[in-house]
Amino acid sequence: MTDSQVLLRYVYPNGFSPLIVQCTFVVASAIITEASLSFLGAGVDPEIPTWGNMLCDGQRVLQSAWWLALFLGIALVLAVLTLNLLVMRCGTRSTRGHAVGKSPTMGDANK
Image 1: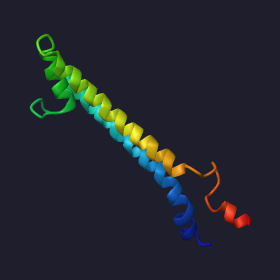
Image 2: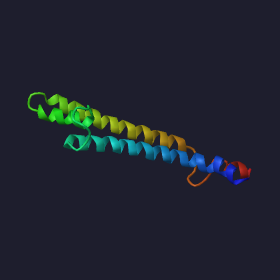
Image 3: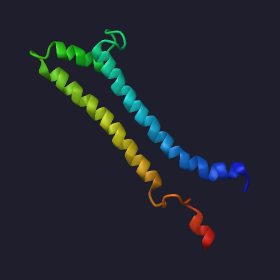
Image 4: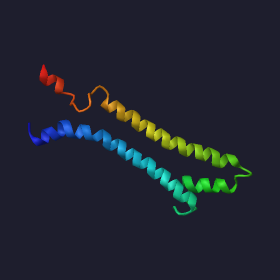
């Protein structure tokens, strides 16, 4: 078996799932970071509607329209949580049925 066959058969399939999981965690972290910086005024231009800018606007009218900040904050938390749960579900699905540290075809070689 050549090196390229080993890469295509074992390394790439086993490395793809952790890469997808890491990328989506980075996306979730970027959403939270952008919202935090925009809320504090250090993000994008205040005229651009972002999570943080909308939360900051909701904070300004918290006494009269409390639901603006509340429901937007809940939506932000649910968006990041859903992204993380979806990725964790996909990550566990891709490794289901395989023993840790063994390739899926190891059982075939022993028969």
